Image (cartoon, rainbow, N blue to C red; front, side, top):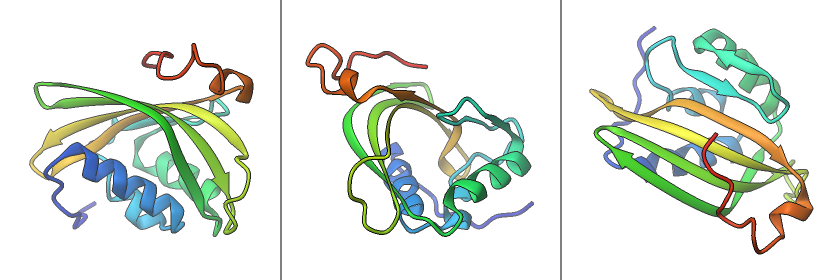
Length: 146
């Protein structure tokens, strides 16, 4: 399936575009950020595993469903090694147009691969974390990669 995605020169641009697409409930923009191979995978905060572009489309469609999602980054760390970047973050997830109180908190690891189309998402793993743990000084930025 040919897609005409923007060529991202640095990984941070992909993360910003991902957050922007979720905020705008733009399914096509969100999907355009994923690596072309059908081995892409996404683990949602509730444990549901999506493998391949078909499942990814279906899963993200259900999440976005005309409802914006705001990821408010509380902490983030990344590691880069030979064309692969791991970004691990803690996010406050706000749902709906008002973006009031967070609906949940997640730890999220995104694996980006540099290919002919620039940087793209190959894997995303999100898991829910208790609000009390997020606010703990000993927790901030110390939850490790998924």
